[in-house]
Image (cartoon, rainbow over all chains, first blue to last red; front, side, top):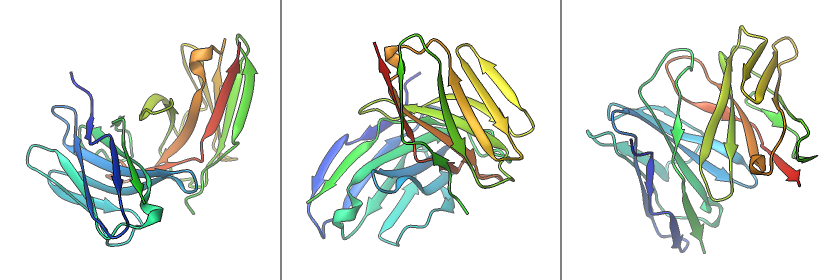
Length: 116
Length: 112
């Protein structure tokens, strides 16, 4: 079974531009979560999707958005990029949402975004 | 609050045991996880423990949970150079969500 795929793996943008990152979950998984990882803030939750609906959102400005398609693939978009958006963006795939938090999540290799 | 604290760095010799510590804040967390991140890679789930357990052993890994002190630890027996990585503890947020609150990460360096 193929793992979680994220594209592109590396990206360089300039301030003010926008960017779209893609995540393909493991086949059969319907939930996708996104995290931002930076040296200063560590791993922070961005948002979570299940069955094409955003179920949770982290404490990020509205410039960060996402969506999920009917095949469970997910994209996240960052508009008007700032230098501080440089980070590793990780996507996690799981079968669904289970109350109580016991749901194994599989992470992709991430997309390294550099904003100049 | 959502602060999960870990010590930044741990250095051990190959063959020794490693103990990585984590302090979390949300007493309602139901599951606590340990993830491993190698350079240039995503996160790999190592093990987890349910909040009503004190200990869980999984091959070379032992997880200890002190719920009263909100303290979690990961012991790696017979540490190998391949165990060198950053280790993150994480707590589940509860409810119907997969959201995880991650710790600050501990860099484990294994000396040959």
